[in-house]
Length: 191
Image 1 (cartoon, rainbow, N blue to C red):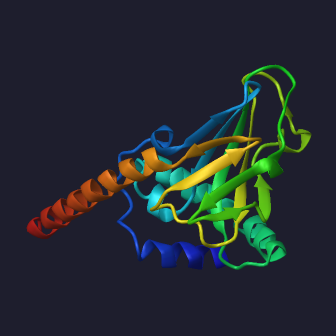
Image 2 (cartoon, rainbow, N blue to C red):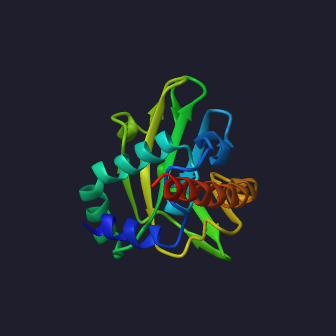
Image 3 (cartoon, helix red, strand yellow):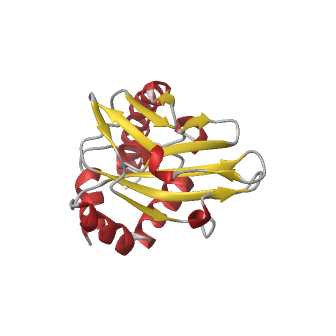
């Protein structure tokens, strides 16, 4: 219930769903340590609504299917409105170890550490991956991370920024608004 309310409130401040064309790979932030690759995707509606419709639907369904676990983790973390981020660790070599707690985000000059993690993969709790194996989870952070501005993802001394994604998202946001207006005009003309 909390997550549905949050998604509804955020959706009011963003573009309509169903008009985006970006792929997940277009906006994911990547870090590679040599033994693992880390992929980070904010699940904020201001990002996901700009993704292709099937990707938007699958991410929305994923969050909804884990709503109870997310709400419980948020309550343990002391917030009702967490920032959700999907994090995927990919093994590059056999027996690659990862530490989920080492991932941080810096936004608006503030360092954010995860306040909760909802595992999505059965391999998550082993903290070890074989080559080409992956483990994914939804991370919860305190509110305050802005996906519309520069942010930095850090893991074990490595950092990557979100600037490439901010530019792509801004361009796509303008295109989505134009597509939505054109679609609305077509719909009203067909009546």
